[in-house]
Image (cartoon, rainbow, N blue to C red; front, side):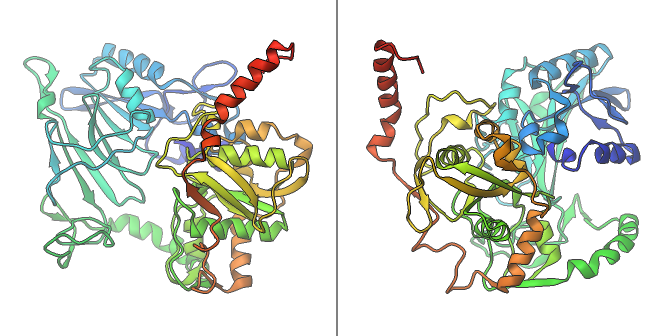
Length: 505
């Protein structure tokens, strides 16, 4: 998956060498030669046996990898089209005698849960299920493959609980943080040498937390209670057996956890109220993140991505361990000296909604509500998801209300992941000259956050909320008429100019 590359190829190759299991990577190639990437203990596919039954397993990685990890770490690699790789490997596996082909894919989708009875964990193909996004990477892959290419999928990447059939293929995904597992049951008919797809079953999600509320049977105690109430906290059971930690693994972890315990429990500040991480609206934790790197670098404005934040902070003492869980990536603070015009372009692409809504500091943005379809701009950008086309930015100003002047120079604090093209920003960042960029100030974003919290002690109080409804940094509204018609007007303007002999475009 994409985050295996976060700490560079040497670190990844060391972990691969140590692993007592194989890695699968069918669509990762050398950028120059096109040959399979040279990784230790790594294969395009594997064949396992279940009795006399040969089962082939293919591994695929998302094409988002270069924009969802540090691009520097994967610059020597090419991520091949998913369909091409899946077809090639499935044909090889069938020739080797594989009767069933499974896909393990760090390639995701988002699906609504569907209408199932509370506590019902076994699903069959004919049961009602929620819809999955037609434009999601995994959905598009499975819809493009011929029938019987792939028999079942274990997916990842989008942190969703998935137990769905997509294009007739059963797909499971266990959410995030190891909280759930799902099981696919496949029935093979030896007489007719085929899978009995109508007998396929998906079981899950099965919680893997120590206790659950009896009437909810999941690890999310903050969910709305059912009509009968949540019930008592009870141990988790799977097929009649209590789910328990593995004593051998606990023994191996004990000295490691003890070594880091003191640092994890070090208190660096206090949260007067919960500090939530939100992707599709103004985020309290995102604002804190943006404020901290702007404060650390003394920049005019700051921009940070929502994907760099992995967990909310609870009310009460803020420990180093909690903050590390919130910000696990070693991103450095970057400083860009940009014109107002360049700043507006970066903001426009960043706030397209394709990756949630990044947080800002020193700025006030008016954006088209995410529930409303935004217009597209006819720009010469590039990018697989084409986030640069969607324009949700109605207007932007400094936090004091002053307009952003096109030719004025502003200092923008952000993180190196975004500067090197992460989260669809490759094209707008390419419009900034290298001599305008300080890729690393030598300060990690996480350390800047720690220093900021220590300097301000108490965060998110009622008198100083991180999201102030009276003075929002991100204001979502209906698009004005002139914004909706802007593309049409630009086309008209270009056509007239061309007729007068002006250069096209």
